[in-house]
Every structure is written in C-alpha cells, then in structure tokens.
Length: 93
Image: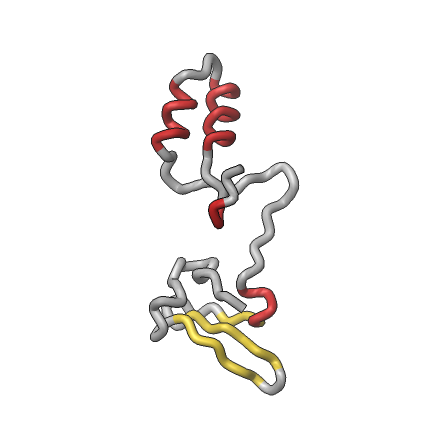
C-alpha cells in the first residue's frame, strides 16, 4: 500500500526517518515521528471528505484567483473558485 503524507503535519514517505511502518502485535501501523501520529496502516492513506465539502489548496491557484475575479457576486466568486480548484491526487476532470 502506498502511503500518503501524514494527514496532520504533511511529512511524506520520502522522509523515511519520520514516516515509518511498524507492527504492534498482528496490526500494521504507520507512525509519523515528526508529529507523533500513530494509526492503523489500513486507514492511514484514506481521507474522508463529507458530502457537500471539497478539499482545496491552502492558497488559491492562479486559475482559482482568475475565476474568482471574473465572477459578479461573492457566492459566484466562491463557486467559481471551488470549481477551478485542483483535486488531490490529480483528479481534476
């Protein structure tokens, strides 16, 4: 299973000294030694986004800002920026 970065601090698998796979008894675990997160390996790379919500970048992309500038109202600006936001994992279809 490919490990995503730590959901709490963002440490990635490339930093092998901080993100490690361990076994506690029969259970595979992943530990982030950067922030102390420890969770089951089966759930580490699963991220849940509730219905009606969307994961977006912390800082708007150029495309998001452009779409927001061209919308007439704040609600239309928000909708335009969300529509232009890149999707995690490259699912921008």
